[in-house]
Length: 626
Image 1: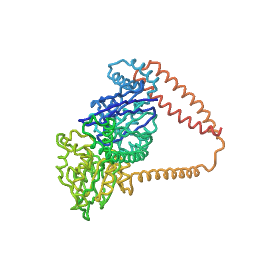
Image 2: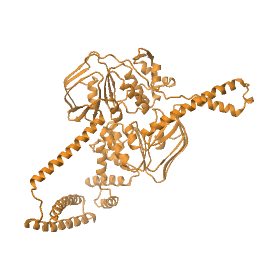
Image 3: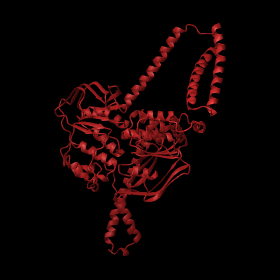
Image 4: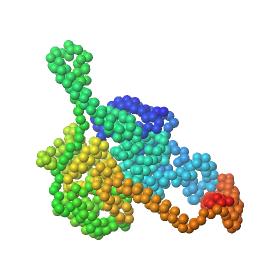
């Protein structure tokens, strides 16, 4: 069943063609990842599908009757709403609308503005919709995404927290077709793994843009790539896509070489023929220009090959002793000590809010510790790539932002590169270098920000979420550069693939000021956690068996007189409690109770449920010996 049809859609931005006459469809149950370099038009395409932007040509058609949800990279929420109100503020979802109306009516009744009997019809509708556990579902999803204070105003949230609230809202809608742009940004690793499992197991159609390669591998069953204004489709996950893309690149290279060989013959024919175009065979002239276009294609992707000369490191890098650091009265680091060594590659891992970024800011010299000593080596030169985007002057030319740092950069082999050559290696061709920064996409700005850090020749690199907004091509080459980096490296990232590939040990932020130094990468840490949990469970089971053996020397074969009497009494008591609960539920549903009586009745039903459960458990235990 086809949910979405895109036919001959084209779009340009700042006189640059993003994509031309692309067509594709999404079928029910399809889970597609959209990839491409920064500036190729991925986010723009999603906005066209969501109806936020209009295509220049073509049309987008959704199947009638399906529920479509879209999550932007920068969602807009109402600042005056609480988090719960922001999640409930969803058009087109009847269940959520009923819950929101119920919460609103309760507030009006408490203030005396509405009579209590107006609730009864609404309660009946909620019963019919099986909606009573919906609010607990909302809180569960928010909790999994790291949001705990549900009454907090949206206006007081950070950009990352707002993104998580908006993500919770689209997930709770349970749409037929979900379109999301970079859902893993601003999530910690635990939340990413929960979202990964959730989307992989949901029966929905999905189109997403993400740079998280583990996420693409485990969630998607198709990859679409935007490249050179065209759309290429590959069945399978991201690993399969890489194999097929390489095959396509090899085939294209062979075709281009063949076209270039033929081009030489055709060019000689064009030169030998009379200049008057009308005297030449028109079909052959047209074929010549088609051939010329094909032969002019580049045979390989542009790549970042940046081997910047690193400032020499001395014997002392950085020694931390008994560092204590708190923020807003909350202890983040408690007496942490560590001596950094040459070529240390350390991953910083932990949930949001445990102090990872604060720790990096401290190491970069942006904040001071409450106590403790940080002893930096005389030759230690720190380069800090922050999570917060650099505030470029939108009217400044791209090349000038680099010349601010250095006009000529020395490479590790002794050669020198000009700012223009360096930008070209960093996927900023000459025509982009003299554009103003305001015309760059978000990902292109982050790439420029990263370049400004790397060309300062640091020997101690601190990277805070470097993978956010970078395309997969840039990430692959950045990983290659960092793998050969001769200095010390400290990375805080939620990108598990990135961390696994680059670090040899990890600082695990466990909360309450505790930092654990683990000798391995993220996957190694998770495996140890899993093994520890299994060992503990097996140990607990053995311990329980031993205790049971001590306390139960003989297996019971029949009930004592006292137990028989207890069994008979329980049979009667359970029946009485069940009837009492049934009568109370009937009263709650007949519309005669006011709000206070309804609340008291609900509390009594909950107590009855607990009593019935306890008595039933005991009755079942005794019944084995009757």
